[in-house]
Each structure stands twice: as C-alpha cells, then as structure tokens.
Image (tube, rainbow, N blue to C red; front, side, top):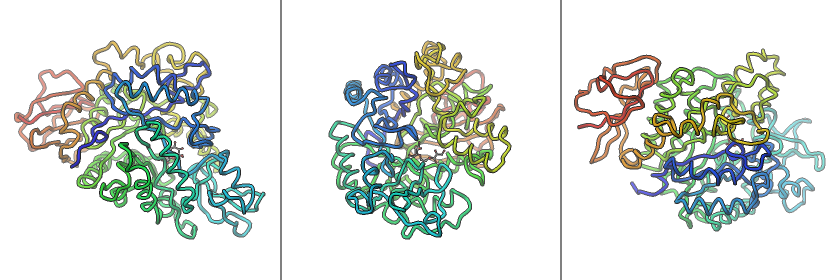
Length: 552
Ligand code: ISL
C-alpha cells in the first residue's frame, strides 16, 4: 500500500459561521479561525477543512455559491483568507476547501444569464426542461422537500434543483461547465490550497431521460435516479487528468448514494479519480421509512457491520475516511454515545474509535470537547433550511407538532451548528454580539477554557489519542478485523502489522461488562483507556469504557 501524507492525516472540520466571531456581528469569520489556529495546532491535527467561505446569499449557509473565486465579506474577504492560508502553512498545517459544484446559487452570474433566454450563451450551464401536463417535467422531490423543478416564466421552462430552489443544478454534460469548474479548482490550487472536499459529487451526472421515480422512499429515489449517474466516473477521471493529478493535494468526495458497490470505484487509485469519499451508511443508520425526520433506534450490530464492510471494500483499492459527525448531522456524542450521565467517557470512547480505525480521520469542531445536541424551545430558534422545510411539510401533513419538535431536537442539522463553546462567558466566548444561532446553554460546563487545564478532560484526551495514533502507524496502515460481531454491547477489533498487534475494546453500554471472548486476556497489556485502570481484569470494562491493549 502506497504511503502518503493524507492517509496519515487527521483532519479538523470547521464550520466557519459557528467557529469564532471577531467583529461582533454574530457570525464566525476567518480572523476568528486565525485567532484559534493555536487551538487547532495543539490538537495535533494535520489538515483543516473549511466549509464554504465563498460569496453566497446563504440560502443554505454557503452551499449556494454566487462567486467561486471570491471570499465572502461576511467572513473577512480575500485578504483574510490569504492571511489564513499563510499562517496555516506556517504552522505546518494544510488547508482544504469545500468545492460545491453540483449546483451554484441562483444569484451566480451564470444563472442570472442562463435565465434570460433560451438562446443565452449560459443557457446550457443549467438543466432546463419543458413542463408536462401543466406541471413539472417529472415527479422528483428535492432533498429539502417539494419538487426539484422550479418554473420560470421568462422562458416558460423549469430548471432542476436537487436542493433549494436557490441552488440550481449545473449541467455537467456541457464541456464548458466542466472546464469552468476545473479552472476554479486550479485557481485555488495555484493559491496554495491543499485539496478539496467535494460536495454531493455523487450527484453531478444526471440520469438519461429524467424518468419519473417509481419509489416511495426518498432514499431509493436518490440511489436509483440522482446518485452515480452514467457519466460520473468519466467526469471525475477527466477532472483528475485535467487538474487534480498535477498537484500534491487531497480530495474527498461527499455524497448520498455512495455505497459498498460503487464507493470503491471513486477511490481505487488505479482509476485516477478521487482519494477518498464520505459515505453515509452509518450516518443514515437511524432513518426510518420516512427518512431522517422519522428516526428509528440505531442497531449496534449494523453500526459495526458498516465499518467492517467498508474496511474490507477499500482494503486493497482506495482509502477510507473515518468520521462520526459533521455540520449535517447531530452531535456524535448525543447520537452514538450517552450525552447525559456518561457524556465524558462516551465522548472519549468515540474519539478512540475514530483514531483507531483504518482511514483518514475527520474530527468535527466541538467534538474535541464533547459538545452535545441542543433543544430549542421553539422552531423560531432554528435556522437550517432542511429543518425548516421538514417542519413545514410536517405541518401540512397535519402531524403532531409537539412531537415533531422533539424529532427536530434529535435530528436537526443545527445541533452541530451551535456556536463553538470557547468559555463559560456570555455566548460561550464565541461573539460579543448576538450569535446567528443561539449558543447551547450547556456552554457553562462544556467549553474549551475549562477543559484546557483539566488533565482528564475530553480535550486533552483528544490530544493524547491523536499523538498516540501518530506514534503508532499500525492504526493507520495496519490490518483490521472485527471480533465478536454479535455482541450487543462491545465493539472489539484487532489492528496489526508485522511489528505490532493491538486489540481495541469499546463498551457501548451503561453496564459494566467482562468480555467473555475466547482469547487469553493475560496475553495482553492495557496501553490506553479513557478511565483509570484499577484492579480490573484486562477484558473487564466499565460502562462506556474503552481500552487499547497490546499483544505481548
Ligand atoms: O444533510 C443531509 C442529511 O441531513 C444530507 O442529506 C445532505 O443534504 C447531503 O449529504 C448533502 O450535503 C451537502 O450538500 C448540501 C448542503 O446543504 C450540506 O450542508 C452539504 O454538506 C447541499 O449543498
């Protein structure tokens, strides 16, 4: 297996709007990131991935770009970005940006032109179709509710938008569009940017003929119509040849519909497309028939199986990405851990899981201090377009809205977007103004400042575990095998190479357990745990205890 810097990297994801405000306008900005570079560096991570900071009307908080080469003034503009890039590099860190190229903002120049007439030179930059029987061209539904088609009276046609109507989809069939995007990518590489996370890259190639979906479940429609279109791999190979392969950068493609069958195609090095992908097999694990806003309990065996299957699928071709949270999902400790009585140990357990699996590790801002979900009293306090549209749809369906607010508490993307908790001060030390999204009241107890000086804090555990992974490359490149898959509480696996053999045990339960597996526990010694080791047997685990053992 070829060794490279990005395989060994730990990536820190920043949602700039919520990270640190330095102007008092309530919105996080690039100077805030610069101010906190020491914090980021102190974690021991290698790469910063910035969610979009380009010019945008913010219908979807920056995932609707109106200028690909301009940094938003809300975030401090180009000068601030150049300073960030320089200072990041000075600290020996790399900077990866977000490429949102499935769609633009409807306020992008290409779209305002495209709308003007059927003969406009930019018309074919987007996907325009005639309606059918006084309605949209087909029955497709958008990710954020409602039809994917928006009628435009100027030319009496509909345009396609998989997300909001302010996010029209680009027409990748058009070679001019591809060239424009490749040029944008190259523009940022020339500035010194170290890679891209590619937003919904799985959706860029549209299905021939735009047929009606015959599926009721939205997830099925994504898989069968929107994702992995006929030319996806042609486009990505082309991007690789035209630009990516010419730079020492990293790429990670994001997208719904990436599964075990097609995932390896994106990242098999010999195919020359992308380095890594984010799949969502474990992130959509709690979606019921009605999708994200119809949650079901997480099945632990399925959770483990997802990691097993992906490790196996990418073992000989490609490379994995390991993450448990992002700006699109609720907080990992609230979701996969226990954010009440066992918040501290379970946050540390999840950190250990992240840092002992094979693949590049992604840590989302705030997870390094165990930030949790928030539960606002009213829908008025929510900002996320996905949440608000789901709310509207539930209201129209006549659902019990008190119950739905409870679902919002569990599932809203705003859970991950509450301001970063720097201190116990007003607004968590995030802003001196009014934050764009209310801070989580628990910032009084959960914050960076408090954890900084506590040797047993989650924050210091992250630092320690990241250093541990760096010192033990077996966790990066070594083999992986899950043991005792049927165990309803324990996630156990071996990681090994020629030099070392490790056994990692996680107790995902509120009960103390002695792992009764057919291995001699005297052959191991405990190297690390999230709890002090008393008179315990090696395979004995307290509630939410995690242990890394070494075979002696
Ligand atoms: O957020 C999701 C589930 O709650 C996903 O379905 C998400 O919409 C999907 O993975 C795409 O996400 C990305 O593109 C969106 C943007 O809203 C997300 O923030 C971004 O990560 C559209 O650009």
